Amino acid sequence: MELKIQELNVYVVVKNQDRVLLLRRKDGLWEFPGGGVEWGEEPEHAARRELHEETGIVAGNLKLLGITSAVYRKDEHDKHSVYIVYETETENGNVFISGEHDTHRWLNKLEASYLKYGLNAEPVIHMV
Image 1 (cartoon, rainbow, N blue to C red):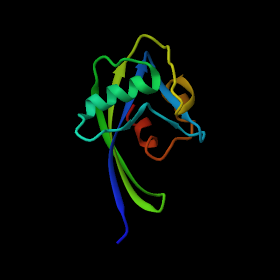
Image 2: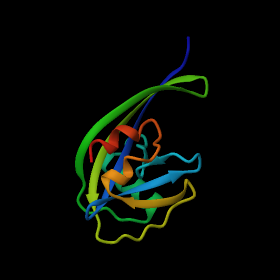
Image 3: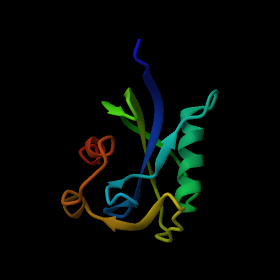
């Protein structure tokens, strides 16, 4: 029987005026700050943790923006990734990216629409 993996993840859409924060992965694709929800962890806590780990930003109020998912094949397994998407605002545009990404940008929705996204991040830009 083939192994099928289902995982729960979070993304955080960080807004600064009319711009959103995007991070570029080392494979050149763009995404929002986020990552996996650890066993027993509340999704909102995971969103705050991942945002801080990846950007140095401490989230203020988090608003639930939506949920998205994707089914794809990775490492010889079928994978179903579910993303809970939160939104927060910051007045501080300073970002300290972790080793998971190589750069960041603050872009308005039109500018962001021209980027190439990872499979799971693409639907999120339409929620913004």
